[in-house]
Image 1 (cartoon, rainbow, N blue to C red):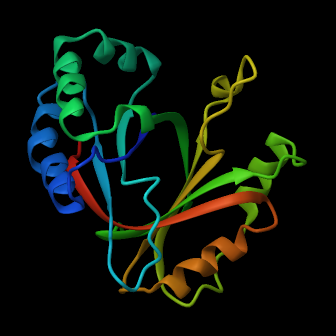
Image 2: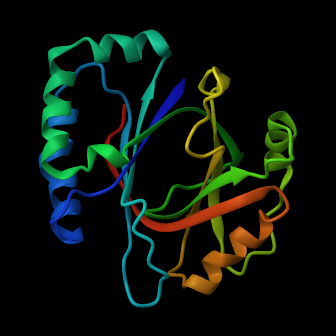
Length: 212
């Protein structure tokens, strides 16, 4: 299985609430019309006065495929053209980043409807394979809240060809039980400081649009 992860930003002048409502209801219906779409999950950042605000990422869409052939089949379908047309309504096309990744479960457990996403760029001096090994070995047992489940999404190596590289070198996902604040979230970034040149956290509401 591979995970097609699309990092998106809202189109101006949409409000965040209107953007999230359209993405969840209107666009979600259009995406799931395709028989080639497997599991489809939207992560909607939570915006409130207790969290640091960063407007470079307004959401993460994840679609699972059996393999790259299944992705190509979708890309050639009329349903995919409809998806692309509808994206123009609410997404800033200049700020879209697609990452084809392999998901590695680092803690098995229950999925909750709240999760923390940590987008990580590796330090330049660290070899990519070393970065991946170290990422898998980091322990988050000392964070001050209960993580029920966690995974790392690592971009496929093909994304690093021809002097190109993905927008992020890893995306960490942590499902959590309780409501948490910015200080709690920042503990995760501290754990990653040894391998990352930059790390961006997003506290999200996880919405399963289709699960099959």
